[in-house]
Image (cartoon, rainbow, N blue to C red; front, side, top):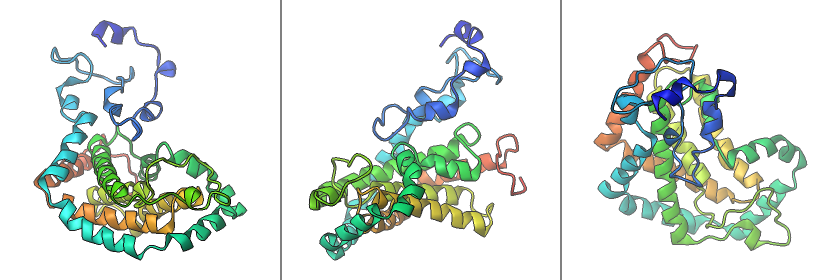
Amino acid sequence: MTKGKLDNAPDQGAWPSLEDLKFLDNEADPGAAMGMFVLPHPSMSYELPASHDVFGTDLLGRHEWRRSLYVQEFLCETDWKAKLTPIMDAAYGDADFETEVQAVFEKLDDEPEQKKRRDDILGETVDYLGVFENTLHIDSFSHPLTIFFARVMMRTGWEVAVHFKEKYGQIRPVKLDPLNIKPIIRTPSHPSFPSAHATQAHLAKLALSAVIDGRLDQEFSDRMNDIANEIAVNREYAGVHYASDSTAGMNLAQSIWDIAVAQQAFKTLIAEAKAEWDRPIQAGLQFFDP
């Protein structure tokens, strides 16, 4: 977009919001990173250097596509596979999917819980980082590095979870009991174990908790953990995951986290994300002293 087009941009009411554009950035299309689509809001003041008419060099430096660099750092520069494979082998060996499929059926048959969870289940097929954002009253505009870091960890979790899904090839509940299991959402075609939703949700929780460490009281810390657990369990109520998938995803997230935060690149990113919470103009939370 050129400066001329920016000057002639539609009024504020017609301008796409960040929340609208967020849905362009999802795991189904990892290349559609939100930073590649976000337009400057006409109510904000923007510097337009010659190097880039819209975003400026500072925002280009944090472009969402750069999360791939951190994922590569994790996958190529750590011994994650050697560390995680024994843990995941043991978890998979302990799971009893033939028994657990009955629990999936019972969750699908629980009408009160289905009614209570349905909206969340449907929404979380597209976006579940937003649940954390709403709780903390932040977004990619107010705290770009914080959200960027959460997305880095979620994308890392996805890549690792996919590796183990392919390794074990566990069939979904609907394939194990097609007569009784009727999922309320489309069942993903990839294997179920471990749950990527559980892995990513718990990594988002760990990332956000690390960045805002010391700024939240116990109530909000507990709420963050509850959100991650609910996202995982909702997939069981949706009929697409076993309880073992969720537990394995949660434990995998913790193991991924322990490896990632030992890397200097991740340590630096955490420090940079923490620093933006000390800028009053960006701090969206009302329950701590800046």
